[in-house]
Image 1 (cartoon, rainbow, N blue to C red):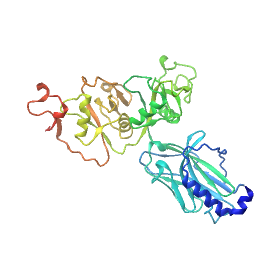
Image 2: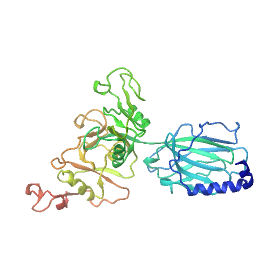
Image 3: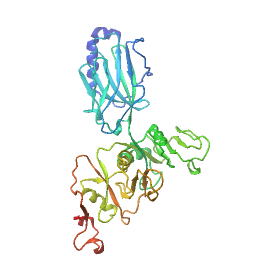
Image 4: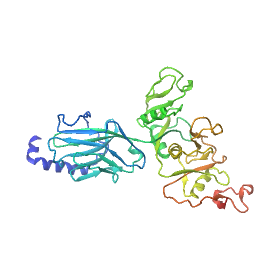
Length: 402
């Protein structure tokens, strides 16, 4: 190998390596990684990488810089032979390619195409600018800097502002495998929460006495008000929360993700649009919810969208309404006795009979979507129909002046 390097020369070797790199997007590559050691400039080593000591925080739709700088002693004025590579830690031994650069040649991979670029703030800057942040961008990233003989890495954690919410489908509690829990969260505008996110939610007051999947494959649940059915009133609680009578995060550990079934803890972040409550002239069955929202240029809101509107947009409404999964819920920012208790949160009526129970509906309107029915208009049945006449088919709705 040493002879081959001498014969081809460093320039030819790097050109060949770059060609292979551009042709093969090794998403999920499972190569060995050395232990990440952060050292200061001036210590020994040809390549020294420095990253953020803690974490960087953004929100869905935002722009964030993942900081990474390097010091290259051997060639302080020539960085063209240095390869910069960003990967995302998918599993402890799996890494997904995000971005790679060698001199003027750059390439982003997968969902990062068109969103990731180098900051390029002078020599030694390997920071990555990530635009239009998504829920899936949450996690740990590795910045690797390599010259011909030496390399070093640093780790950056990207966190998101948002809200954790428990979820189970219409079929009842403890019905979801790990993969089904992932799909359920995605269908409700979320992702499976991490253990760190669940712990932060517990510290913020989340209390839920049903175990749910987390993104690392573990099963946990947060208890802020200890009681016998939820792990007892005293003694040490398992998991990240710890504690005694003050509660904690109960932890079942890592479970068989294809056979065992639990609920899910989902996470969602900032909404690009708006959630609003629509009260037609008469409450509607679930089958009329989609038409009612469509008449206002919107769609029936998902559970995650309602939680995001409650937590981040301070939506407060003491009226239950249909959501896209067939559940009925309402958000409370300012608790009052007639609205379900003394704590803020999203109240749930479960999954009422879709044909017999009648509610308003929570709608979600995407950014820029017009409102075809401005204030002063509602939707109902005109002419000889109406509820007394028995014409309850939503297809017969017509705009009515309120």
